[in-house]
Image (cartoon, rainbow, N blue to C red):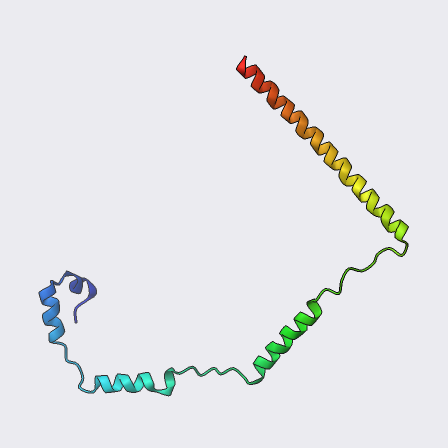
Length: 119
């Protein structure tokens, strides 16, 4: 028996003659077919009958429980709700104005830099 290093050093002709000298059993093909077709290689783990029903029930529960019911009314008094909306819009407006002021100041700085560069 040769080791791996000896086999790697062999030439193509030596490999071909070595493969011809190997004796193959006569019933090897039949034995391989029997093994491949035997029950041993088929999957032995089977899914229980109730598993698909359990998965379907879980999906149905998730769909039913996950459907939004619509927004809840958080105000009983419409005037109080309107006042809250106005306050929210006032806050948004103030933040937007502050952001615009900052943007305009930065734009002015950029224009000054450009004018100084062009002089």
